[in-house]
Picture 1 (cartoon, rainbow, N blue to C red):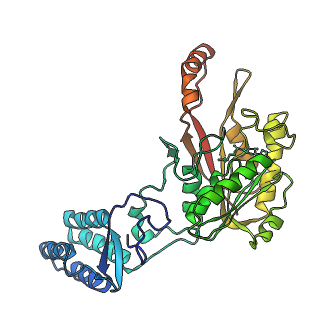
Picture 2 (cartoon, helix red, strand yellow):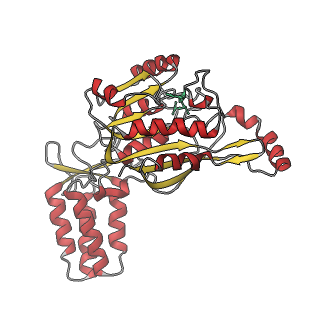
Picture 3 (spheres, rainbow, N blue to C red):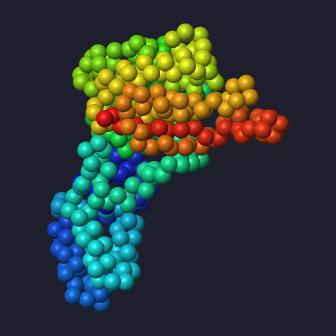
Length: 372
Ligand SMILES: C[S@@+](CC[C@H](N)C(=O)[O-])C[C@H]1O[C@@H](n2cnc3c(N)ncnc32)[C@H](O)[C@@H]1O
């Protein structure tokens, strides 16, 4: 719950998480007060001390830090919620447990090696998904993000992945960079991103977009024209001064459902599903060579429909990644919300589904793998 000093209005990852106003409190005095709360001999005493603590948190109260004083910062709403929880506890043990948890949060950060989520204040990250169903009502259209590249993913996907599986300064590899959503989002979050994309016009466009997006962390967003089935990612990373990658985000074509170019090296031009999977396998092999052990690979893909038959492309692609020794960590189902253009065809698809005995696609997958 405690934020590192100085408090940032945007939260620890530089991403909004709706925590509201932040209170600056005198750290040592707060820890001392929470110690005394935990040492209460009876629940009634603890509640009296809690009332005194609440009063000390009000503007001008004894726990409020003055400018220049060593302070710990708490999102105000979360702090009051924690105090309410202590006050509502029915046993002394439970109340002490909550008080102790708050004390840990006041003491400082506790993070895992692969991200910057402060586990001592995990409740503050209420916008980080932990469920396997991602319902994203509206795409993030802020900054330079654009929805006009048919086949790009919503910025919330790379945002969630990078905040969960990387730290600031880590390197993210995106071998199907497309219109650059991962690069733009990485720049915002202070992650370095290497993107590889087959189409030169797109690469030019991505460069222009990342140049237009503020770079307040001074991170590197580098995109090159290339064929990821044959790319030497180690050499490309080395050119940027990096030895390896800490996260890979793969958003390949969903075989031929959108033809991205006429280039035979484009996975959307693979003659068959097997040929597509073989090409994807080559990309995964190249990625595996530069991804650190214990780090994550995310595969974003959907199924397809061909000659009256549902082809489980997502699961076939999942197995292609597993064949490279990755451990499957999660299968996330994400909703697909049609654009205005697609919505116009909704009725037609509904009719076709009723006639054809199938269901219209409303989901895609985010598969999460860990390199063994
Ligand atoms: C689904 S799109 C990725 C969209 C991207 N995530 C975004 O948000 O803009 C897939 C991209 O992979 C590119 N692509 C296909 N085959 C490729 C290959 N062999 N090497 C590199 N890029 C490739 C396509 O040109 C297309 O832009």
